[in-house]
Length: 485
Image 1 (cartoon, rainbow, N blue to C red):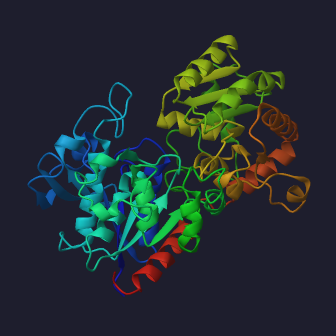
Image 2: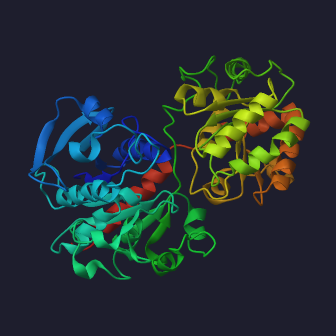
């Protein structure tokens, strides 16, 4: 049977470009889908790092002009990924990050930059690369949100489209005056099109016009249909409830494998977790913490933002220290939170350690050395940090929201008796609730037998992509079996 052909469209893909969990998903899912008979090609922007990685790639399509300059679609295979790269130097070849410039502000032409990505996806969907004509175009987050719109409005036969929402908070809203410049017809401006509170909404367009919408956990798929969590799109999402599916993310369990992880001081596995002690010592040394085996070490690998509940954690540092704990922070984000955690480390040397920034090896060491991982998010579409924590035996302490609630089984009495608990949940996201969760975690940690059971349950959990890949493959096949649009 001929494999189903899918074009995945994303603004970042690990290991070529990464700012967050989106890249991890788009980098790992294609291989898992391949095992399900789905052949995935991934379209992404030609940032400098991407062009360097693909080298002398083949040009498979050329644009004399695309939003201000010539562009090409290049084909390459890198890191096990079949790639199409939109080589548009005037849009992507610049210093700074994928979305922000060196000054920390959003690139002023982001509307054009990511409209170009959507337009190229629509062109590939309609066959401009003759050797690859997709059955499905799978758009990820707002940066790819116009791909379903371009396919919808240009008429004629087209592939089926899926829009995946990784985080509803980031929507890509731009001035209405850009409608014609973005190549959208006048009739696209409306409640059933791209219009969103007087602006052009890239994510709104994808949600409204894709054949199917997915998000990254079942609970989040329910939460975003409520006014409290719908970010202004709850009405549309309720309207599309029949075409909305929550599919839980996974992690790359080959890359996140404590038995083979070169970033760890000592490898280990579920049968023998003794190596975690060496990793804890290495983490303590790296962040200037006291070498104290009797102190429960709480780790954080996160963006330092309000969404992630980091302000609540900062308030809770005195409570954590009063319980005899240590805190290891790795992350960056809002300036006030960065300076707040840096100040906390200065005020409690040996007890609080903070690395402001992102360091991939250090993130692995936190997972392999911390006794527990804190994820106090106010909302969390899925979350990957807690999945890595389960895999590495760092017992997750999480807010009861979104994918955190879907993946962490609270170690209540019944869960312990039934051998199911693998972490701790708390609610609401407040200093008081988090402090109580920390107290509970320390009490469980002091009972080393119970703590070992929590680690064992977590390390046995299915956190890879197999289940999700089967669900995506079934969805894609169902859509592809329908008459052409």
